[in-house]
Length: 314
Image (cartoon, rainbow, N blue to C red; front, side, top):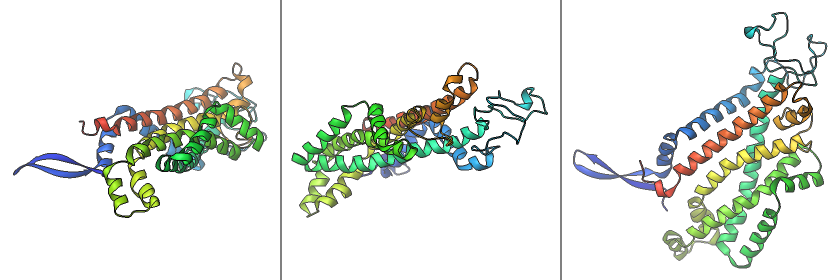
């Protein structure tokens, strides 16, 4: 399972072999998939928005505009280029129920949602990788104890379990992130365990063991680096799930608390205005959909690019 492959090339002296990094081949295959490229472009735009939100947002997302402009609650979008009166303040996606600029809150919500996805998945991957690696490598009672605990967590619907954890810990964004991370651990632990089981009996592992390598060196130095491929795909897809779960918790009032500009919380606060002010529900929902779709497209592309059956494909 060395991280390079041999590719035949034709030069002036005939056929020769050259070593190419497996990751170089993976990147080339990834960029040949249109869906993955679209996902990466959209995610790149979202990351750029998150990094520059304080400069491109026309208003402070937490600032109430009463007394600053002549605006009212749930004011419809106003775009001067589309015929909105020039004497009316421009708010391209309208004003929310607390008289704040909805567009600015959407931009800052990108930062919150991406942070939610990355932080929860990182937490779950770290814990799940350690548990899955120990379970797959040592087996026996270690495997039994760890996997039975994971089975208990998997027996509950993930969102309901997250709601129960947040209910115990108390509403708040940090507690919601912790809850989502905890319910995500079993999926990563099972993926890593399966990969470790398939790698630990390979010749290069046996050779390291014969040379006197310690269990720590064998597991974390030899086995895990060659068992991370499915974890990368699972993690990419897991970010989309984490963003959805966090939005659901915030929608229910258990996640981000006012006035944090989080898309799920924005949906929850205006859910009763879906007919009178549909723009306040449509745009946060659209933002969630686009972000989740982008991560799913990238995850599907990574899965195809890292598929060992296609490793030497075109």
